[in-house]
Image 1 (cartoon, rainbow, N blue to C red):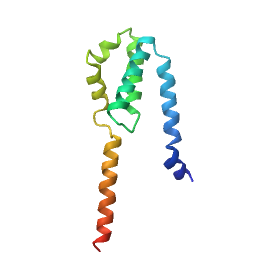
Image 2 (image 1 turned 30 degrees about the horizontal axis):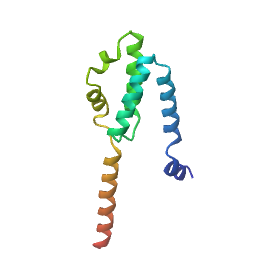
Image 3 (image 1 turned 135 degrees about the vertical axis):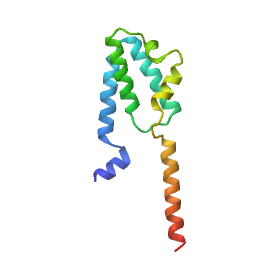
Image 4 (image 1 turned 45 degrees about the horizontal axis):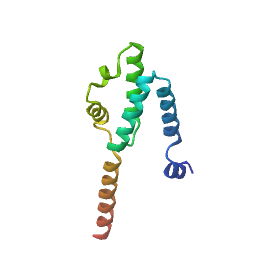
Length: 115
């Protein structure tokens, strides 16, 4: 039954982790909250990531930087988009998962058809 729920709704643990990370982000100083929101939006619009690890890493970095009174752009650099791209480099994207799913499915079906 839990496999059906995970298939339909997604992992409840992942949802809980995402919510906890968003709560952490909301406690950041204003400058960091704004930057987190904008970077998260950019990542969601451009990368298609399927894992929230980069967002957790981002909050971790921002919490540490805020604790040391550093400015956001000291962390990200002036090219914030490049920073965000680097943050998600190597992460599996939805697009990659769908490509793999198609290749595996077709391979299985063609393998079955050739017998």
